[in-house]
Image (tube, rainbow, N blue to C red; front, top):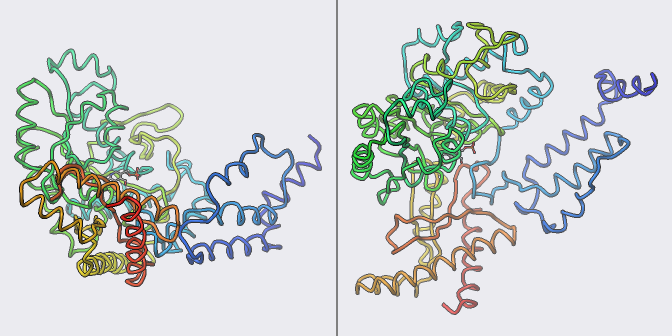
Length: 529
Ligand SMILES: Cc1ncc(COP(=O)(O)O)c(C=O)c1O
């Protein structure tokens, strides 16, 4: 290596002086970001077909020589920014990742620049405390312990109120890892095989509703229980776990000498936003000595606004709770928290090492399943500081308003039918042309279940094709899922919307329904329905 080459590289790419003297790349980057965040494009999806992008990105070797940063920014603009799914577009209402306050995006830049590693205080000085403060704020919303608990937790060098994790998936895994060690002590060191042999149990189970998020299966596979250890309990018409069915699942597992390690309440469910009857579940879990975990990855953030607390009655009885910041706290991915009622719980995962994470060091990495971790709480800290609880409350209220507006709009249409509504802003509905709706009503009232099931399958095809075509056309986006707990006979395909996109207004909703109606009418003709 010659000295000039390294000097040049350092000067161009590491020296901040150069950037400060010639800030053109920064200004260019800011313009690009600003344009993107303003949802400036016409449609949520780019018009370049995905298949055409493949050859553009198929170079199989990295470039030998670097390019000027400004040229790279142009390529970033034309290749990446022009071809993203624009999730913050006002007509993109299909998933949980949507428009963001720009201060949280700015905070991300600081997270990258500061590059703190949350694993230990040596590499994450004050950011250790910010992470603890955020965990305390959220923990307080869930568990409402005395103030002293939160002041003490800031200085504590052992135990923890929770972990900041990469997402709800990691949160569920962490909670279930703690639950397993709690219910079957020694598993962590000696393995599941040894502790099971000693326990005398015929098997292990985790119970959740049929609406459980698939991350629970991933966790069970990872922890060695196997996906089959998840016992799914049917839901009622409101997509909440059926308590009678839950009791009989527990009774039958007990009769087979199967130990129920954990029970999972959902608040709210990914598909429909429903909140399980948490208080009733907590009562059963306590009676049966089952770890009670609440997956509030989606809905938990509502607890920061007082008016939604009543929906979560019983959550404070949960042993652990997951809340995603990158969902209803409007921060960029990834940011999530898993909280524990007792700060000692996380000691069940405690790791020490000689060169770092010394016992009682207060290093956050002691109780985390992950190793090196970003300073991901900075963006949430920034949003809380800048928006405040009142700002967040306004955002949540806007989501509730929009959700109400879509329900009202759907009620006015004779060819759309609301299937589920929820307090956490997720709705499902269906396109059902009037003549098919009438036919279905007649078949059901005549008790012709087989013909009604067949018609329902046709409606399934119609709605699935509708959603696919709408996605392909790219003017707007809603998602879809299959529910079994509807007034229709058999599995029912529904269109699913998440009303937390704060860029969306009623005229966007009307445009989406008009577009769906046009596609639906064309499909009815094509399918000969
Ligand atoms: C209820 C629920 N739990 C867990 C998860 C997984 O979260 P993540 O995608 O952040 O890992 C999701 C994601 O949608 C969810 O809705």
